[in-house]
Structures are given as structure tokens and as C-alpha cells.
Image (cartoon, rainbow, N blue to C red; front, side, top):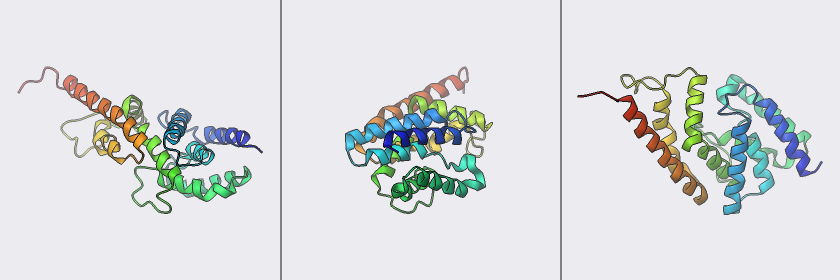
Length: 208
């Protein structure tokens, strides 16, 4: 099986695996992250392109937001898939990337300096900010039936706007590569512009 065939098989595996995800974590998110990761690596030239592409395709295949308590079984399934497609040699590396890529992972372990991990973290985080990031945030908020914003209970109740401060506005400072830092700057500015407009409209007509 050649690399083209392996990539096509991986695409089909991922599409099947993400069927129940919201549209912010669907196949098109994977495709955007793949493109961003490959672009970053073109600029930085620090990772094996094939391993990077496989890991980018699989990076959201064990997402605890959707897998729940069964997420460890997800790693078993991915390991079996990698073995079946002749990718045993990179299995440990790819699974390590998947385990550590998430922003919400408070206990990362393994090779945290792997260039593949660093690039995919950057690509995944870039897709969480800017115009796409805003669209994804509100889509996921609706998917989870979260409120948009409540100024009276903002500090106590999760909302989509609070998510900006808990995660999205932080991501600019968590990029690993120079290329991602450059791309993040513009997307971060768009987040701040959006929030200013949001509050302006929210407070419309309000007087002290």
C-alpha cells in the first residue's frame, strides 16, 4: 500500500469516526487543520510531512468531549487502524500527538517537543481563533445548549463569551512556531474587534 492509498484510507476512517461531532469538530475542521499544519511545516521544515499529515487527520479522533469515558478504547482502535495500514512504525508517535494536542489536557506526557505535536497544536489552535474560531465557538455553544452571554452571572455560568476569555484570547500566546505566531496575530485581533462590537450592541441604549 503506497502513501497516497494510506492517506485516503485514513480520510475515510476519520470521516466515519467523526459522524456524531458538531460541525465545529467535523471533517472540515480536520481538513483545515491539515492544510494549516502542512503550510506551517513548509515554512518551518521541522517535521516529516507524511507523519504530520496522518497525525493531523487523526488528531481529533479521540476527543473526550464526544468519547466520554470510552476515550481509552478510542486509542486502541486507532492503534489497530495504524497497524492494519502498515503504520506501526509511527503508531506510538501519532498516538502521543493525539493524547497531547488538546488545549484542555492538564497532564501532558511523553515527547512534548515532537515537531509533529508542536505543529498540529499550532494548527488546531489557529482554527480556534479568528472568524472560523468565532463561528466554531458559537456553534459548539449551541450544540451544548450554552447561553451566549449573561453579564449578571458571567463569572459563575459557562457561556460562549466566557469561553473567549478562558481559552480563545489565550491561544495567541500559546503558539509554538514563528509561522503560527504570525498567523495568530491577525486572528487574535479579529477576536478583539468582534468582542468590542458585541458589547457595543449588547449595551445599546443602556445609560448609567
